[in-house]
Image (cartoon, rainbow, N blue to C red; front, side):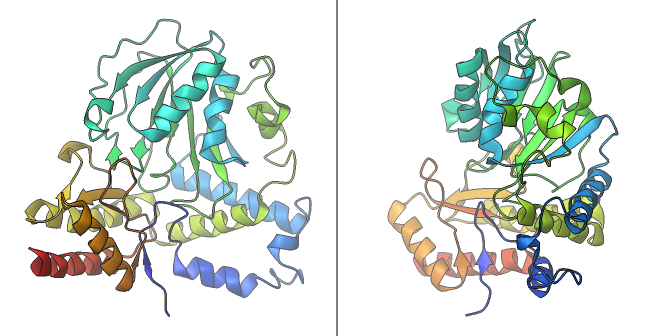
Length: 360
């Protein structure tokens, strides 16, 4: 069997040429006589790999010099605790709840201080982004927290919240490197890489230097202090070496594709094909308010659970993998990250048209 069209929400599709290149280097990386998997993280060869990866992501995202780039472990979920531990000076923070992951981060923050939900879209199963232009943010809040693209619910903050001068912390796991971003608008921007950037096991955190300090919450583990990681250039202990190496290859691939402007155009084009079909379909319906639709994750339903199951099964048989929606939304979800080719979306829509004709 050949490669399938993989619509998984993460771990997700990677660029084929990156996989081929990694395969070629698997046994002997650049004449070292060993695989990157076997290489000491203290070696010159590996030092070059991680430094070059950092240079490339800095260039891609135009990251200012006063921001550190950290390659960490523990996924985005570990940062749910690291964020309050490192930032909660006043033990208070404002959270905007737009889905499962913001909800989990909010629950975690409550362990360390007073977390205040200043807005939420839970009333409509997180199918929209609340108006965040004039929120009641506590005077003494240490930061304002968002999950910028909601993988499960398919929503995206197209306008960042008005934080009333507080630092913005954003989990960007599922929209990482999918479009240009103004890093200066954030205090902290971080994400698990297993959706758009690389294999599971790495989380990249981009943190303004003044937020990296010694006076963190008492009891913060050494490994979860951003300062520990920043002072050691992400090499305090053995990092996820191979995962970082693949991320580096993906950065090169994005540069070759024309950078983040080109990536955004490519992603808009793909998403438009799918959303245009959903908007005219009699059988399939998108679940998100139009103005808040994500370019990365597209949930849709037929309104009939049996029919949804039938669709997922038939799609799988036709080579479209991982289209089952999250249990809280039901139906289907197509994740169409950077590495999903346009023809993958075109063929999916073709298949949906055929299914609709046969089942209406």
